[in-house]
Length: 141
Image (cartoon, rainbow, N blue to C red; front, top):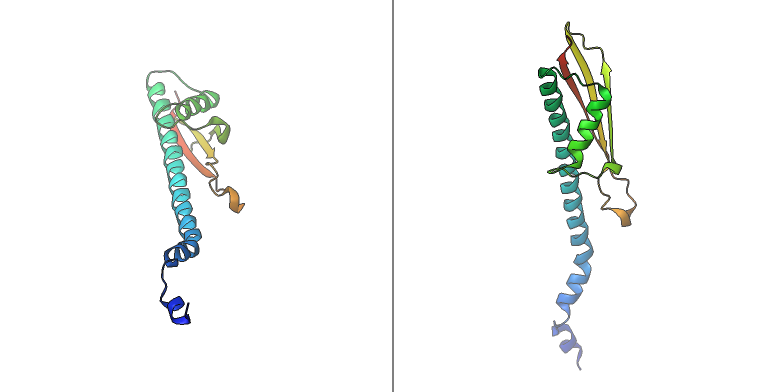
């Protein structure tokens, strides 16, 4: 085989190009997937806080006054059920009554902290946690 025949031979070019580009493409796909999972986690945590707020306010309107522990349980049950179905071992819920600064109102701070699924395991990168603190203000009478 002559040297010119080797230069003109293109049979293995696609395999070599794939071998060079595949790691980069796989890393980009994993990055897109990771960002999607974290955005979904953020939206879920935010919606759980809003749903717990709505539930608490409605219960106060029905004269069923919830305390901080009950608000925590409500948030956990909302997170555990559809459409969120977050694993409770990755979710931390804390509710505390704080001064409202408003006459005739009671304020609770509901803090949700969620650690999303770690998709970057081979890269040994710490996944960011999603934290949402939401104020729940109800009448104090």
